[in-house]
Image 1 (cartoon, rainbow, N blue to C red):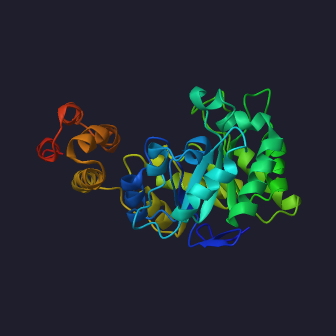
Image 2 (image 1 turned 90 degrees about the horizontal axis):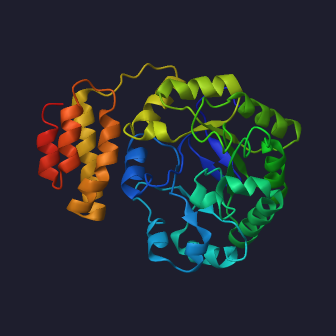
Length: 328
């Protein structure tokens, strides 16, 4: 284990400058958001999860998810699948986008994903993850990571068995969201399972980085997780929504500094910058609508922001956002 809390990470043949990543987030980690995360200090970013079936059929919406931000000199693509039948063709379609890392989603708890056997439902089929990892590595030569949960529910906590199956396929990195599928995003994540997984891989002689996810909502949480568990890095997910500078703040804390939280003026500037990136990507009206969920997250916990939020719910133009935020 690296003695420094903030340090480079080697994943297969890929080296990342630091160990504070942005997790894949369906509906959030589009190109504008990943641009903000890179500006905010994320060492590595991932696309939203991409359907192997959709990719193999060259679905327009699926292909759009693979677009790369100009700031993403390195980026990962997250795939979800329930079968390897279409995987070779999907990987061929993925090749022109030149990802640096491919992640397999075995953690999504959403019923529309799990009912097909994908996401966290894959944890009931360890043989599938072994096969999928092998196919990806053999066909692309890229490093492969696997994101998983503790298990389906408290009676089926098979994260060590499933991790071993991923390692058997040649996985180069594991990320554990420290909850079961049935828990969703509550109650508190069981960080102790992260320490157990790290010990398991070390004792098994596997030199693969272990990353943690779950209950990383403040910059200090990264330090707590790394210190308490001995894992190699963290993935901010929901904690980055409405606070894309959480990465640089966390990195500063890991290096012994005490960063100040963003001021209201800085938050206002960040919201407008986020909106401008979305307008450039989607067009003004679509961006203003899609930005509402992000704006609500930026304004969360700020006193007397209810009126601002109400105004933004109706906003369809950039100017309406600017006016609504004047008093922030």
